[in-house]
Image 1 (cartoon, rainbow, N blue to C red):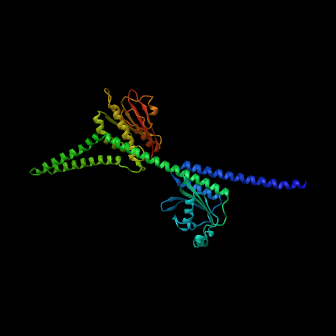
Image 2 (cartoon, rainbow, N blue to C red):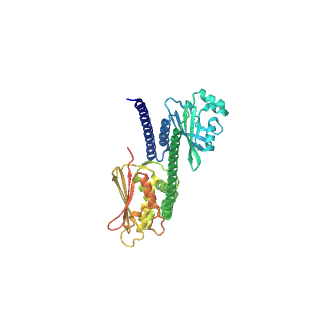
Image 3 (cartoon, rainbow, N blue to C red):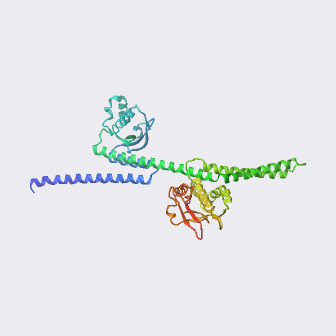
Length: 436
């Protein structure tokens, strides 16, 4: 073998080794990006697992000792997530809130001004803060730092910062990699922000829908409240007469006072139900007895049914499992479906006006049905029935059923409608049972 051949073999082997190292690095980066995307997909409403995954990947791939996320607040930069190598103490990190004008705040002030990556090769060279720099070094703090901005429409909203305990500047490839991770974090933050805005808008629409629906029932609800009050007044007058007798008939007085208390509680319960449906409150999950929730809604719609000549029947199964959800939102769905059924039958000139509310156990949950004997549903309307702003009512705005479906789907269930023979429409929804 000649000299040329012996010289080429080590070079070829070295090139192959370099290629293998580069390939391994690319595969590690792809695996890290895949992990981040999985975190975003599985946690669309929660930033913490997303930030944790990004930080862990960025720290490991860039061989850093620390990684932190800070978001911009009026008071400074607040720590929201961190990743530390096993050998690093939390004491080396700056305070939870880094304020402008401080030693650590100086770096963030510079980042805020430039909005581009800030690379501090050696903290000891920060001459304007020599005393603080020495203190950092003496307590074994971070020596090399990399600050990468998180930008939204050219506005600084946060920072991904990596640190090394040793003096070892980051390479251009590492800075580029960390910049990509910071961009992913910004995207995740934007997704969560928009999800929350959409959820807030949905809550506002749902509240407006509840108020509008109760407004349609105002006259009927007023009658429902006045009735127990009238009974209580009559009872008080009767009690007064029994007391004025000689001798006073205390037994009758006692019965009258009991009726007054019962009717007063009944009126108070009606007012409480109305107040719960009208008030704005954040969504909350609780154990809900669906039959009990339906019974409360029927109490509010009883007057409307009587006014329209509708006979309301119930077929509620016993021993149903509890469901987990927001009681007010589930009652809003029932309120919409019941009022829609009553209104659908208000124009029926002949035939029965019957509304049947049913519940039964379904696979892994409960199924609720609202069946009316109105004019029914035209097949061409069914595909668009739950679309926003689609309505078959002359004075409708087409949001009620759309909101109902979004509520049920947010609870992990389904809402659908079918025609019914010989007439009428059947609306049904399912809700999963509460986990044991």
